[in-house]
Amino acid sequence: MVTHVVFDIGNVLIEFDPVAAFAPELGGRDKADAFLSRIDFASRNLRGDAGTPFAELAAELDDAADSALLARYPTLFPRAIARQIDGSFALIDLLRAQGHPIHAITNFSAETWPEALRLHPRLGQVFDVTLVSGQMRIIKPDRRIFEALTDRTGARPGDCLFIDDSAPNIAGARAAGWRTHLFDGPARLERALVAEGLL
Image (tube, rainbow, N blue to C red; front, side):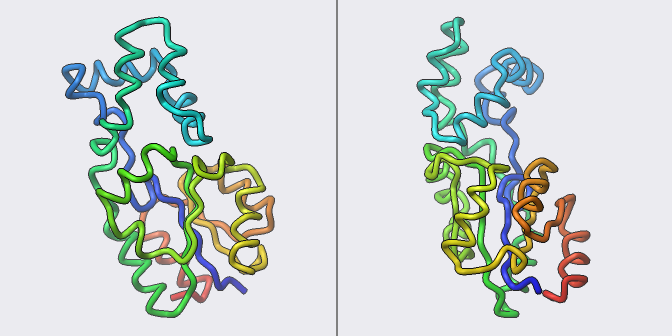
C-alpha cells in the first residue's frame, strides 16, 4: 500500500526552461536555442546535476564566448525556473492534509539548487526528505538514489509512489520496486492519486 509520495521538481513542480536563461544575453529564444544545441547543453547540464561545477563544464568548450556564457549559467539560472506549477503544489497541500509523508528526489545542480530555494521558498518547506542529485553525486535513474530515500525514511519500496516527467527516471524507480506515475499535468496526477487511495 502506498503511503509515501515522492515528487520530482523540474517540470513537475517548477517549469524548467533553459532557453529563457540565455535568451536575453543572446538576443532572443532562437539564438539561445542554437547555443544550447551547439554546446550540447542537455548532456552538460546532466553532468552538472551529477555534481560537476559549471565552471569546469564551461572550460571544456573551445569557443571563448560560449565558454564564458555557460560559466555564468548559475547566475542566469533563475530565469529558467520563473514559473511554478500551481496545480501540483495544490495536490501536495491536499496530500499533506491527509497526513501522507511527502518527499522529493530531484536531478539538480548543487550550484543552482540554492537559487531554486530562494526563488521558490516552498521547495524548502513542503518535503519531509529532499534528495538533490548534485549534493549526493548520484543522478536519477540510478537505483541508488531511490534506495537512499527508502533508507532515509524507513519506507519500503512498495510504500512509495514516484512522480516524474521523465520516462527513464520512471523506469529506474519501477526497477527499484516503487509505484510510479509519469507526470503530464496536475489533472491526470490528481486522478492517479485518487486511484491509489491517497486522496
